[in-house]
Image (cartoon, rainbow, N blue to C red):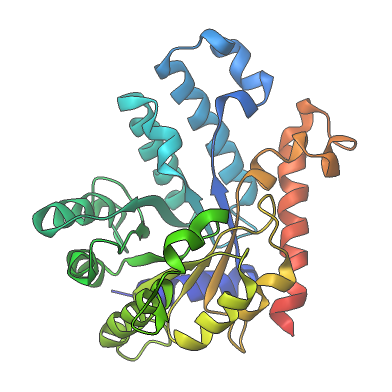
Length: 308
């Protein structure tokens, strides 16, 4: 089986971009043409799940020829209960059918057999039918200890899947915990060292291994330092776009070949028609055109820093 990092690298070469489109459906932000026929503010959970599915599938159809991967945010589907999770499965399967890499942003993490069960549920890897949810990769939390990552890693290696471990997150108050100094290093640096060591032990002959790291674009100095600290670790970089991160902030995430990282944008693409940058050009009825424009603008924005 072809490894996750090799499959991702091939998609990045094919599309010539490291842009990652997050799928973050929010009922109050969806276009009226989707929400009103389904009941608007009075829509049931099942109706909202139908709307989320329609919205995300249409975004997938728009971006599939342009980007290597999409990242569904599991929480927005999970809040709708069983209909939402069914919609999530449908959205992920649709993305896989379009040859997109699918990263489930679920931030799972637990001990022992529970971690094994989470891994078994989410990490399909190269065979979309190998797990309950057809994800190529999964975001995971390390804060219960390195041993809690091991079941995820073993499943990922077995199925040619990938992991992205939370190392330096993009939210403003992440420093409250992640910057705590212990044994002469910050907590996020200690996590980064564990991630790099685990990844290196499973990397084999690949340039990058199966264990990646989440590092926010909102911390550009730390991003640069962490790339040096984790030279063979794939990076997933949130915080670009709506959270304030710029293309120059993420430049250090890439290697000399423009590989090694995915840069995520969710709201700025999903709801581009609501943004001042695009609302003058695209009315709500042209939300699809706004998604396309925002995706192309992101691709162009990243192209300059990846080529430097």
